[in-house]
Amino acid sequence: MQYRRLGRSGLQLSELSLGSWVTYHNQVDTHAATEMLAAAMGAGINFFDNAEGYAQGQSEVVMGAAFKALKWARLDFVVSTKFYWGLESQGSKVNQRNTLNRKYLTQAIDGSLKRMQLDFVDLVFCHRPDPHTPIEETVQAMSDMITQGKALYWGTSEWSATDIQTAYDIADRHHLHKPVMEQPQYHLFHRHRVEKEYAPLYESMQLGLTTWSPLASGLLTGKYQSGVPQGSRGAMQSMSFLLAGLTDPAKNAAVAKLAEVAADLGGNVAQLAIAWALHNSRVSTVILGASQLSQLHDNLGALALTPKLTPEVIACMQAITQPLQAT
View 1 (cartoon, helix red, strand yellow):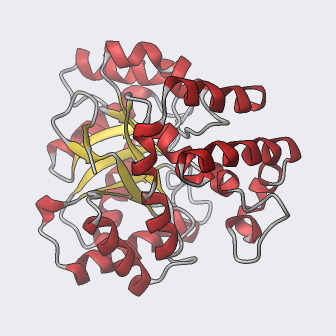
View 2 (cartoon, rainbow, N blue to C red):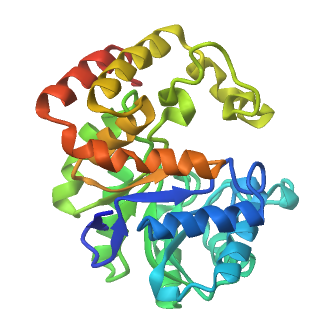
């Protein structure tokens, strides 16, 4: 496992990391999470991604219980959370859902720390932009989290390049803690934001990236070529919004071609897709998701494929997927 700096910070993250979206609490209980986290750490992974909104806070509960069971030294791992969606238990209460206002953020971090049984998180993200709260207010609240020692670095997830630069400039102008990282979706069918839109930010603010969904929610494993397997993410009612993309005939035909490329390199299509995301030097870490230990072990096989991605292989992969890019 290699390690990469998170943007302009001194923090080093494993190039592959492990996330908990969809899986923890829904598919992975505390025992399985403990086993999976231990295997990940054994492979060199040091970053574990979470969010308040995952399983309505229960993902944080599961991860926190696993951390406690593992008894790791706090310096040995990096953990994140994200805020914006709020919790369903809060109903439609004003100031508690779909917001980044100061009141919500100030209390949300305390809730996450309690659920994860931690004194602080290393990374905290604004999970989506909030058009109804002034960016100045959000920047001040996030900076205060850092000052109070409840988080060490803050950043954004799925924000536009314009809003990220605006937040950075506000923090710089008022001598506040600046955003360090962004967490965008990035895979072979979804490249524009990372490769084009954010390009100026890599120079202007040395933006770091913790990218998610390298397998396009499972599409790039090839398992949806013959329908929706029972027990898969696509079969979950809560994930029904993914079905159209997962079963798209053109994308699945492209996945079949990518599988041939992977086989020629001695791997499978999932490993190839993860290796491709790692090939981008702007990416600080690629977040994996796994509901079974065997999936995690298989995904780690991407590390052996990465050195085999010659310019010719990259060009071939991108030619296969270019006509199907998300806009």
